[in-house]
Length: 188
Image (cartoon, rainbow, N blue to C red; front, side):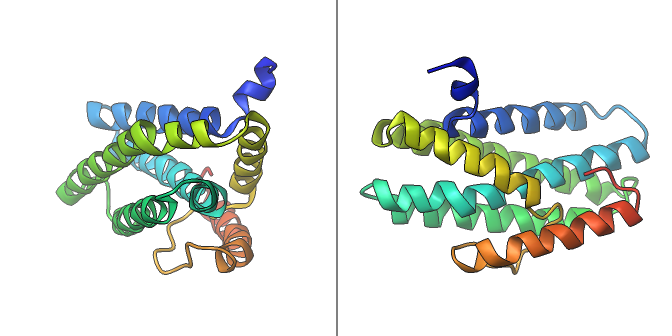
């Protein structure tokens, strides 16, 4: 396996996303920066978490359902955690960074997402790595990367999280979100 193939396998793609989110979490936790900078960081991490979650729901969780004996149970649990985080992101989106609730919501989101990441990395990802052929993991990783390009950039807590509806509706929501991002000068 070449370095490029290794970097695009599902496990590498997902863990790379996790490390990037953790980097932003540490910066948010530092408390440094103006309220505007903290808002930009929060918007950035929300965008990345939404894109990541959508891609997992489109490709990783269906793969878990197919190849793992308890795949349905694992996928349903992960999707429920996504729904909780998405609700928190939606609330956070509307808070002014000078509002004391902003830091409370950031703290809750960080704790919940870290718990989710820890579970995925300790349980789901090793199981998928053991159950899938390297070429399947590469294919899934490439699909996740492509899905993130067209995924929504804002939380949509009531959107479908399972195929086939999410495969149909997510790219449309992503297009609308990117237009909204441009109009509001939000970096996505």
